[in-house]
Length: 471
Ligand SMILES: [Zn+2]
Image 1 (cartoon, rainbow, N blue to C red):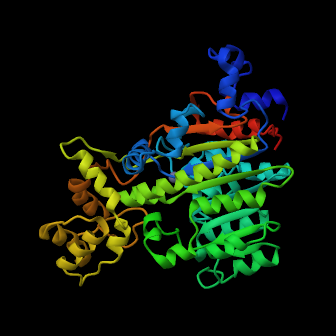
Image 2 (tube, rainbow, N blue to C red):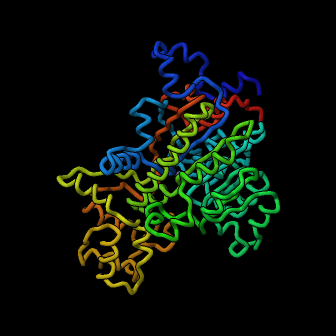
Image 3 (tube, protein in one colour):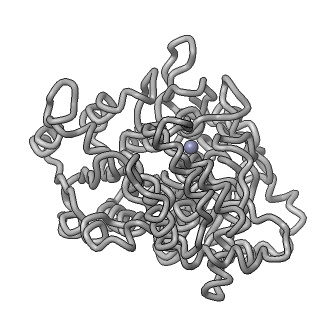
């Protein structure tokens, strides 16, 4: 594909915008502030919080500010005017409300496809995923996530599949395509005990020259001269707050920031550069469950990964850092009221997620025990009536549906009760059509316009790295 066509495909990029830029008088200072914006990006790190409504970012910033005096690293970049910022329209081919597979595919393949698919259009046409494009020009490529590594967001940068649900096959595709660092959860898609075909994917990866790691210690010790596959839990990794308050999990499971650091260290010395996707996947799961401490503490974990990426990029000066989310979810927020401040601050005393609370309850749990459990997890005293209402869901009198809620636990009912104590409300338990936050630092960030389509990000990444779209 020639240069002209390349630019035409990236529909929002117009040559000469810098000449028309009204702040070009201060271009020098601005250029330094966002880190050599006109240079070529040798490396790209994209840090995605999955399903992050603006209220999630906002509440996490408020939570940290009120607790520590400092807000999020993400918003600090805005406060210091160190990034280019945009809104991005994430619609899929089939809906204004995208799912994670179509969202990641829009960035990964540069084409809007239907919800549920990965880089395959309705007519069967396949779109080459961007991490394969970067591998083809000699770069290393990887993904780290807190959900299964075979899940939609990493998969959308790496492979083609008619369905996002083919996670066992996706694990095999990662092996065939030899991505350099792939780490997250999803043991059930790799283990011979749980796979339908009984194939031991770990053996297959080892036989093909990979280092297989299954604990934080193994990850830290892994050599950096082999590709790494890291799988640390059965399905998603534990929520950050549950991990922090459980010694065993704390020892076994790395944080998103730790995985990010390892992935960068493993790929940074490669002469042709590297590309890395970092996903805080359980922010989305927490939003589906209206699970406030799951949401805020996992957004903090995303923010710590942002810091790892930024610390590297500031020194390196050849790395484009992209910080974003793939769609809104459940659109939470702190609601006006006399006790809003005090109520919101109670979240600082939470020890566990609602996921932890509800999974520890059975049909035989008494109201008193449930009240104690919630008091331990949230430091609040719910009423007997509230406890009884929740317990009804365990005796088949009621049941809740919901993505990532296979046991039909009363997530919505618990969030409604908590709202009186923490002043946090939610509009739903599903994705929303929000235009999403997008921030960029480093070489190539000058290409970002104030409002873009999701597919434009695909072409921006190629253009920033000066990789011609000849595929
Ligand atoms: Zn998503």
